Length: 133
Length: 133
Image (tube, rainbow over all chains, first blue to last red; front, top):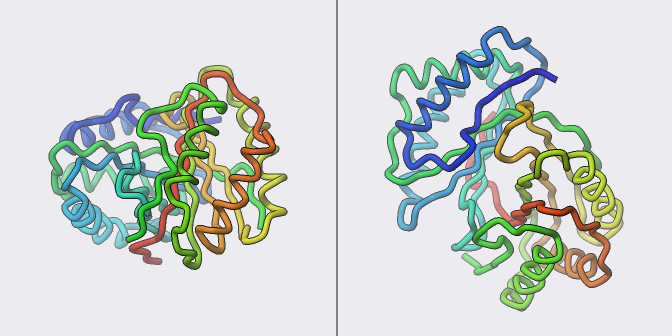
């Protein structure tokens, strides 16, 4: 299994720190092999009263990322419960680890993700290990 | 928006407590309307050395749930990074809130989910609010 560090081990208070964590992740996994079909899951801990602002920030990121090579699809999920621990969860498919890394690095370097005060983000790459319909 | 409380606000140390939280959730949302196509996302905080045991517990739950009315599909995602905050994320589709609630209540009442010491579970119901391909 390749070693890829994307998610900070504790919630980040804002996107500046999240972006720093992402940049660290890129440096740690330089040279990771490109493999087909990875899923980015980003679990958002949204501060009270910041839901609309967070959705707008996500839309800005989405607008950029969906134009990048290797992007396949994305879905933003909103919790039905007002007090859910994770109010938003993004599930996105990318063609490969390398494609996602390159796109995210470019987004971070160009400061394209609006900062949301107090927002906790937990982006990490996954693969489906069991599926059934 | 309907009020549905499924996820505990803090990580639960084991499935006994998680099941109690789920039972509380059911009582809080009794009478919630059934609406089509909801997504259950369960974010797992897996203690070190407990990954295989957690996957086996998930499989036992899946074997039961996939036979219940309203089940549509499920996918268990495993993080690529060994030290990801959330090592496993389950994303399952159900036909309605009520179908999922009935199936989960039956599973909890029959003690069908094997306990995993120290496992944090965060089940919550979601709907896709934005999607793009």
